[in-house]
Length: 108
Image (tube, rainbow, N blue to C red; front, side, top):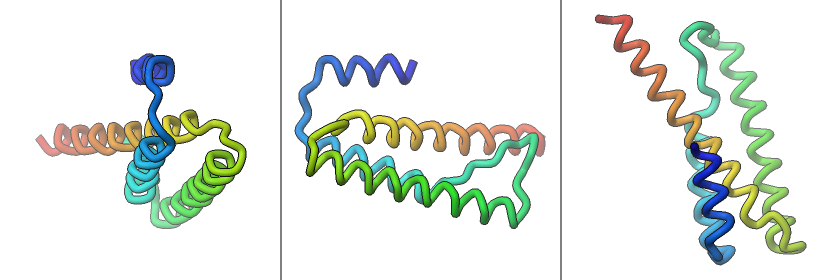
């Protein structure tokens, strides 16, 4: 469903690069704060959490560099990369909410 919404946004909207930049910054901020999200069936230990956080931040930094290079120098993928990062942020939020619900349900 989220993919359909993003495809409609891409198809019917002509947002300037600054709007895509704001969407991108929101997605990057959420990903930076929330990553990684564990699963209730296999929680992370301290070492796994540290390693996965480092890996996710490396990938996030590479996405930021790639978007800056492509958006400002080549003018390609101005819309695609921010939407993918923002979608990733939405999925991280949904994962955190799911984990809170499972923990709350287990406590009852």
